[in-house]
Image (cartoon, rainbow, N blue to C red):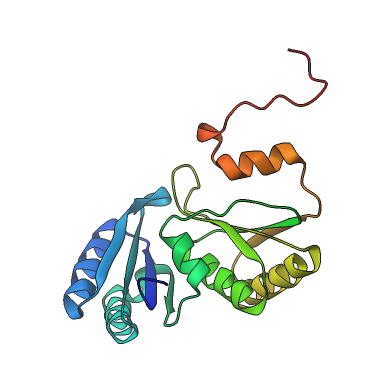
Length: 203
């Protein structure tokens, strides 16, 4: 069961405006400030969660104060359970099947695209990365499932992103090598990855 019915993210061009707006929106309604702080390119990212009514009220307060300083933003009034868990850091093991990757220049649009994909198909969301270290402000979502489901999921996600004029890079790995799948299960960050010796490789 998901802890919060709704979430919202707001990504600001400027840190000062981001901090000021975040203070205003969390004062507007009884919500949880899940996370906020600086990200790459000198931007500021805020993630809030709570009841649908409270998050919506705070979200619109944020839009009011930020105005054209917002790089990206999203409000999800009935967040998908798998996406909810991924936002809060849960990772799912990659199993047999295909892998789909969706990479965006900002974070909020990736969250929205991932939710559309999850609600429209039966794929698993392996991981959702939001502007963390070395991503340069990007959002990345990784899906796993049967090939036809992955194709449908990426079609939904990419169609939404392109329709909204967001930059997107996407790929499908139809039959991932077991070494890559193992690395994905451990971490998709190079700094956290483990050394992997392939069969036939010299010691």
